[in-house]
Length: 305
Image (cartoon, rainbow, N blue to C red; front, top):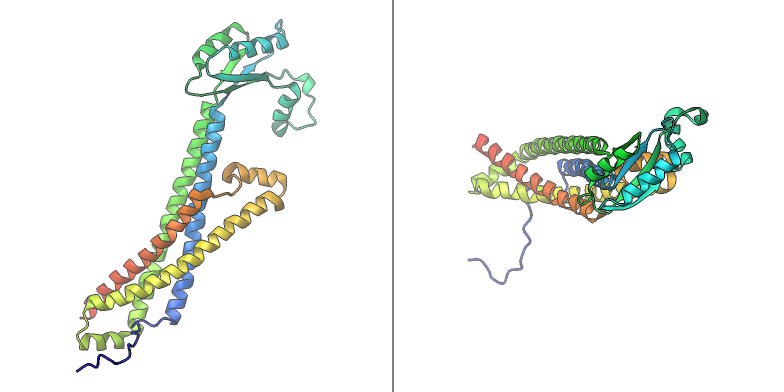
């Protein structure tokens, strides 16, 4: 008869806690989680930058006036501003100076070119208060009164930007899928290796009547703990990476390089939604580790039964 006054003894797991396989798997999961979080964070940054760029471009249209012999450019520019401001949904219209127009062409034509010998079209920047309410068709009709005037809504640029961002997002998700698949395969091999090294313990458990469900549950609990630890390490490393990248873009890299990276990734600021996505990925990987190990153990047990 069992003595009820006997001191309570803590049961230990049948899976060794500090085995070489466990430490290796934890390091592997940490690395895979880091790569997954960096990939997911990059997707979030690109998507946020694309949305911001698309919104900025959508709130602005450009009136281009080509130089035509017999036409007074300054008069046409003032007329275009007046016509634009009379259209509903237009917040304001301003003439882009000739110096600013030259600066826009310098990256393609160089700064040493004599712009005075060129007939440079002049631009009027029209800012929209609400792109959905702006009557751009009316503005286009009104500009027909000005010779050489045309309206550019930047729709082609927005379409290319959205296509590029969509391609990057889909590519990132495919890479994330490959990383998760590699993680699952690694967990399978690690689980089978652990089962093989503990075959004697499994045989003893079978001999005393332990069910396959009990044994699989023990492995599942141990691998869940390993997955959580590795996932937390990888997730924190990914957050540290984005924090360091944000500091580098803002303070370390030259202005030109920082601006080029900023076009695609913004300021490397994940925001609460990006950090939430990374935080959500950690328990998902831990749960995937536990489920994969349980399925692998049950299949292994069926094979040796």
